[in-house]
View 1: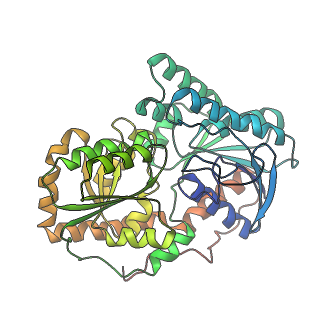
View 2: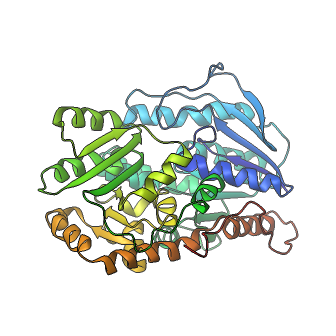
Length: 423
């Protein structure tokens, strides 16, 4: 199969969709497919250029067996504001247009949508090239933009949703990563649109690190309570407001925050001004330290701005539960993350309106070793649904069928790693 993947983020960027897109492309190439990636020069999550190459030239490189074609784009100083963000998004399809007729015809095109810029180009390419187009929805941009305040006002939100729907409609096949997001897409999809649930997975390098860990099931809560947040911070995470509320509590804890992103500077400024020794803010960690940090923590913190949770499922959830570490989720109970917590018993789910109950709930957990162990075991059980091999097998089977290729027996990845049975 000759496959084109369009994604704004790709390695050496390593957070968010960059990790999943890179891992998928490498594995499909290892399975013998001809994979080309159109992407940007690395910049995320720091929002700064990480390459010395001329950003307005096109750079071709071979990463493993994947052909990568990089394009420049505009990087705003304030990515959380609407106008700079719109210019950023539109600069990507404009830059990509130089590759509109490059590379001949592909059997299928897959576009990743945490951002609409990639979808704009894929819709134009679909119009002119008529290749089968798969829309992989990791985030619903219009909904997330409205909830986080980047898109302000009902009129602008309506325009954003209308543009989003028109762009999405160019693809014959849609997929998303949670049942709640699939249902949201079903409400706007045409009857003829193929719609699939394709969960993300624990990527290969992280799976290798998790496989080396001892089982933590039954390990009691530490004193003080060890909390960890590790990942990007934007407005939709609302981590600064959560830290402000957490600091008010008469509670012994150590909260380690490893972060980058558009809202990391305000968080660092707050931590420096507050000077609360319970909080420690550092940069993102390499894979081995990231996995060890999760394993060492009692609870892994995931925060979502009220109203934003229905548009995405945090990718950081998967490595968290794969280590057997329960989640402390500050999120809407009706969103994808809240549903995961409630349905599978993988930690504490607290809505923003319930923050006053957090000390009592944490104290109850600290005094209930049976509850903690139940959460730990439930995490490992739920992590089985996010195994790398079966997830990529599913994507490959759909791609082969979608592109008109013959579907062979499921391929079992030689580098897939399961959570150890002892865990």
